[in-house]
Image 1 (spheres, rainbow, N blue to C red):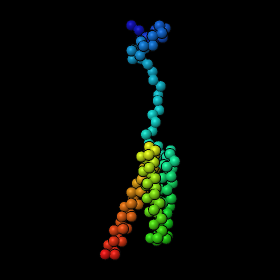
Image 2: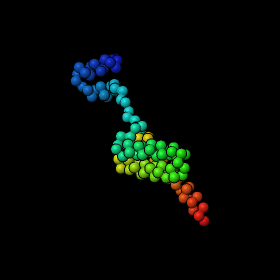
Image 3: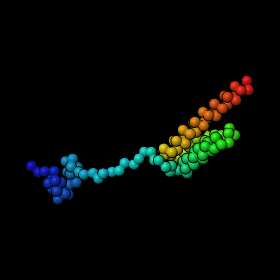
Length: 125
């Protein structure tokens, strides 16, 4: 009875590659699986979405210095970041985690805008 390595050598001598595969003895090289989600964006729209989200965050930090007037540019840039992030995800197939984070920032800004509008309506009523 031949061992697995002897069968492989015998199959190589005979030129029968199929014998090696049928015996179940063939080595596979380790394959590095690609990550499904990258951290940094790879598309142009994804980079824009992340850049706008960072700019919105910086503008939000200035809100404390400038008062409510300083918050308006932050909300506008955050909403623009979300729209660009949606385009990057659905149109270009972007799967970077930072683009999804920009989308979360968009949802937070949208919730803040709704809250401000409700407060304005209740104040005027």
